[in-house]
Each structure stands twice: as structure tokens, then as C-alpha cells.
Image 1: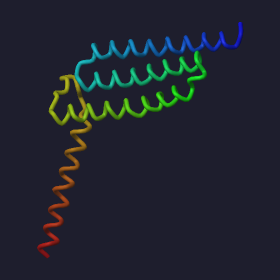
Image 2: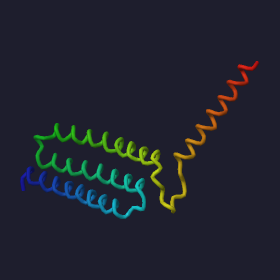
Image 3: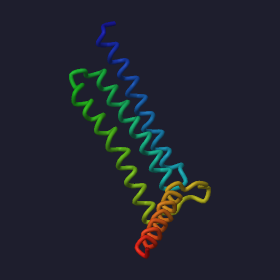
Image 4: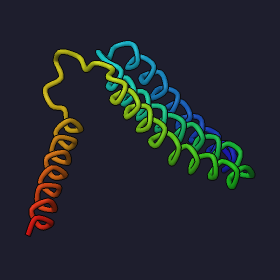
Length: 130
């Protein structure tokens, strides 16, 4: 077999692996209990699946390396950022967490920030009174 055939075989296996991650991500969207878990499952699986699929295409069509690398970088940057924005928007519009959720780190962080602001305001008022 020639080197080109080996590249196509390797690229095909990598692309199939990426497709499997995309399928698993879509199953995760259905199986997860709330919006936040769905966002997380969908984003991680779609990011990895897309990157693997594009990497497989790089092996199959090496002439497209530059274009596909730019696509990979674009997906690597935009997918996590967009999912973060969606999750924050869902949180601030009070989309409920599932009943089995044990920890809400964002709520804890916001409470700490509020108490810190209140403390700083109190200190500022005391300094003004002196």
C-alpha cells in the first residue's frame, strides 16, 4: 500500500472516532437531567468530535491543512465560550437546577462577592464618619 492509502485509512479512523463523539454528545443531550448538564455534555462532545473529524480530513486531504487548522482553532475557541455564555444566561434567568444537584459554585461565589461588597461599603462609611 502506498503512503497516500495509509493516510486515508488513518484519517478515516480518526474521522469515525470524531463521529462517535458527536453521536455520544447527542445522546448526552437527551439523557442529562437539566439544561446545565446538557450544555456541558453537548459542548465537550461536539468540540472533541468536530476536532477529531477535521483532523481526520487533514489526513485524507493534506492540501486543506491550513484551512482545517483554522477551523479547528475557531471551534476550539468558540464552542467553550458560547456554552459558557449560554449557561450564564440560563443561570441568571433562573432556569432551575435538577433536584439531584448538590453543589452550586456560582451561587456560592456570588454570595461571597455580595458579602465582600457589603463589608467594603461598611468600611467606607466608617472611614467617612471619622
